[in-house]
Length: 166
Image (tube, rainbow, N blue to C red; front, side, top):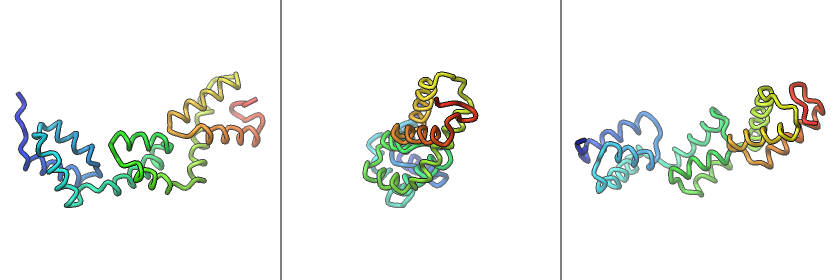
C-alpha cells in the first residue's frame, strides 16, 4: 500500500514544482491527488500557494496562451479548450485570447495551411479543402478564418504551385 504524504511534504513538493514552472490550481490539485495527500488538505495547500504567489492563474494563462500560440501554433479554440479543461475562468481566458494580434493570428494560420498543402497528395479540390479544414480545426483555428485564407490563396494563385484549389 502506498503511504499517504503529509500536508507539509505535499506543500513543499508543490512549492518546488511551482518554482520550476508555471502551474495552475488544477495541475497542483492533480499532483496532490497523485501523491496521496489527504484531500482535506488540498484547498489549504492551494490557498497557501496562491497567497505566496507560487500559483497565479492570470500569469499562468498569459504564459500558456503566448506559448501555445507562438511555439505550438495552436489556434484560439484549442487554447481555450485546454484552459477550460484546467478549470480556468472563462473571462480570464477571453481576456488573454483577445491579446493575440489578429493579423499575426491569420498569418500563422496561413503559414500552417501552406506548409500542410505541401504534404497533402490529393487531386480532388473538394477533398483537399476538407483535409485542410480538418487539419486547421484540429489545430484550433476557426472555420471562418480557414475558409477565408483558402479563398485568399485561390485568388493569389488560381493554380497554387504545389496544389491546385480548382
